[in-house]
Amino acid sequence: MTTQTTSRVNVTPSASDIISKVRAEHGPLMFHQSGGCCDGSSPMCYEDGEFIIGSSDVLLGQIDGCNFWMSSDQFEYWQHTHLTIDVTPGRGASFSLEIPMGVRFMIRSRLFEPDEMEHLAPVHVGPLE
Amino acid sequence: METLELVETHANRPKFRSHYDNYIGGKWVPPVGGEYFDNTSPVDGSLIAKMPRSKAADVDLAVAAAQKAFETWGKTSATERSKVLLQIADVIEKNLEFLARVETVENGKALRETMAADLPLCVDHFRYFAGVIRAEEGSATELNADTLSLIIKEPVGVVGQIIPWNFPLLMATWKLAPALAAGCCVVIKPAEQTPTSLAIMFELLEGIVPAGVVNIIQGFGPEAGKPLAQHKGINKVAFTGETTTGRLIMQYASENLIPVTMELGGKSPNIFMKSIADHDDEFFDKCVEGAVMFALNQGEICTCPSRLLVHEDIYDKFMERVIARTKAIKLGHPLDPDTMMGAQASNDQYEKILSYIDIGKQEGAEVLTGGGPADSVEGGFYIQPTIFKGNNKMRIFQEEIFGPVLSVTTFKDADEAVAIANDTLYGLGAGFWSRDAHELYTIPRQIQAGRVWVNCYHDYPAHAPFGGYKKSGFGRENHLMMLNHYRQVKNLLISYSKNKLGFF
Image 1: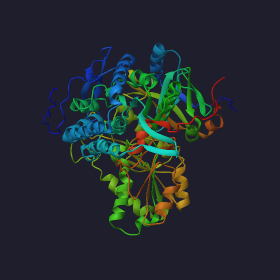
Image 2: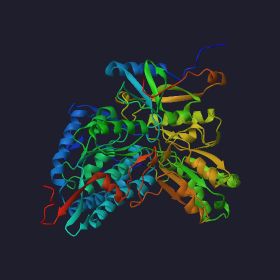
Image 3: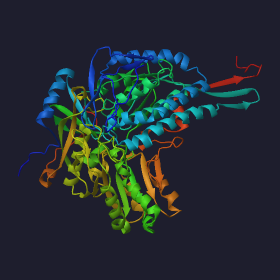
Image 4: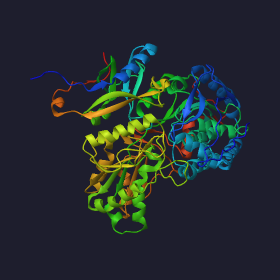
């Protein structure tokens, strides 16, 4: 029996490339998944610590060394899906750091397989110590 | 001012300048860093114009200009401010068709919507706020025979406004009209997808709005929007957008201890009770249209009725009509007056909507119509109006797709309808349709949303307050109560007694 855990978030090579470029300019980064209007339902990329993590935020994992967060109530509806952070040409409209490069991070989702569901990595809730 | 002439092509695309600048202190000012970015049209991918790539230094200039203008504008009489608002409305009305075409080219929405909704609503909105401030009064209360309390409303000062791209001129109007009516000065940042139409509107308004009262800063969110939201020289922030940026802006506002108003989207339920299908008449036809309103503005509306809740007994009869009406939506070039649905506003928006259609299919939702891209105009971003059947726990029922995607489910009775309607993080809009006079009042009262349309949808008249419950934000726009979000209360507590208190 495998004891390997299933990750909840992943990143495409093209998104990885953009993360590297943004990090070269801004230093360590973090992601917070948004919801709602306009540019909502898109991942936001900030300098690490720019966005204050609260007791209602869930840490889904890391992509390229960046923590990926989401509010816990949104996570309730998302937790059965695996998220891949991708990137697409576009203008965006938010404070996400990649926007001036003419690209926008976006989420591609797939349902977890039943055996993956059994081995999901536990999530951390609230700010890291 | 250069004349903005129209080039007559088959689609009447307006002629744009090669570039536009920031509008600061009544002048068109190039960005300090000298950089510009390309603004392209979602209609066909063509270049509209180059726009300033502003940074913090540009925001500093704009805030300083607004602060200077506030010294006089903040003291103008309601009569004077009202006159300016009326003149703004007149100029927009006079140039309505031109501005509608500009808005269509920039945003991608169909011309018949910008002609019939966006621009006429702008006109009316300025007139509404011009009117209410003439009729307003403060209050005076005699607390006792010698003590009078005077309540006077004073403008908060300089406000920062961050505007979304889905209704570039109308959303700017929703924020500008009450702020100017209240006596505030504004630094406004349009969305980087749709920066040009507001600049063109203010070219037309030159000589009407006093210098520095409205300042427009163009650029990208992290470079221009963030320094505006953080600026120590502003006294209030108004934002329409999504939840994470909303939280970040509140975080910045908390550092400066200034108030904010937020409109953060929704996942609006549209509930159709059994009685709507009692007759096949005009009202039933209105209900069918009400369900298809998800396609208005290509679904790019915070209140898009994207969750359709239909009583199980009428599902087949009603949905047959709704699907047929959806299939009859005419896609095409947005500048064609017959086109009913235009382009999504940007490529990233287009990709995101398609990713949601994908997750909907993966989750087992049934595609009733649509379900993929459309090819209305080469180089543009078009998606078929799409209807899924599924259940409310699916992600397509819970997340704001901001596209022409409808998710339908059924309910057995009113309690279940309300439970499904309220099972969402958001509470901006909702629709309720019935022929039953009793439930027309009692059920909407149970829906947790700031606006419940009853036997109608997507109507946004001035004088009807609009804003969110739950994670959809706070503040009420479109109504005189918004004035108080741009003002603070000065209380003069006056003693007419000649006698000392006797403590000392």
